[in-house]
Length: 107
Image (cartoon, rainbow, N blue to C red):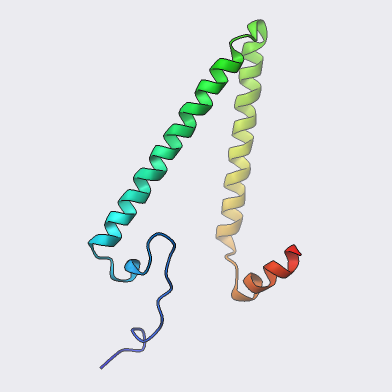
């Protein structure tokens, strides 16, 4: 006898497909691969940003400490705005009605 929950259609998640519902070995392998890929991507972008900052700031001379402080402050402000936006979205997840109305508002 099937339960009511098993008769519902399971929505597929991008890159994880429907394996999240069963959570077999394929699910955990995809999760691990995605985590490692994201970690490698972040490390690459951080290294690239550091390299570019060092190359561009090599000729700043006496202004280098001020420029470093200014760029660090800008990065902190950007991270702060990202955290604020994340917390605002997490506090009020979109309802199905708002999801359907979102494309109409963008036009």
